[in-house]
Length: 76
Image (tube, rainbow, N blue to C red):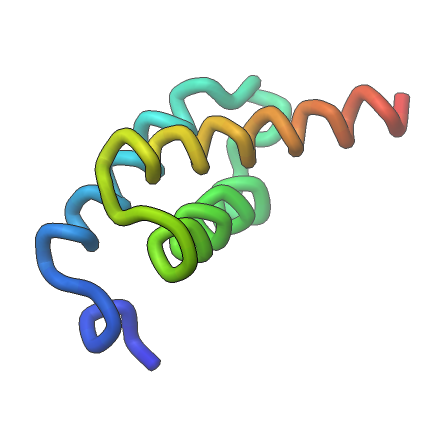
């Protein structure tokens, strides 16, 4: 199912803003597509199951970035 079929234009816009905000927090070491995709998936999951507010979506993105950072620290 396409995002446009599942969410309103407003929610999609808020998801995009949340993704951009979260990705600004990423260290350059994982700014690539896989990390960005992971964060986007967490934001979509949040919008589907929890909240569709910009604040909530942004927080979900920030948590995803923190999760990625923690994984990097654990592997080093």
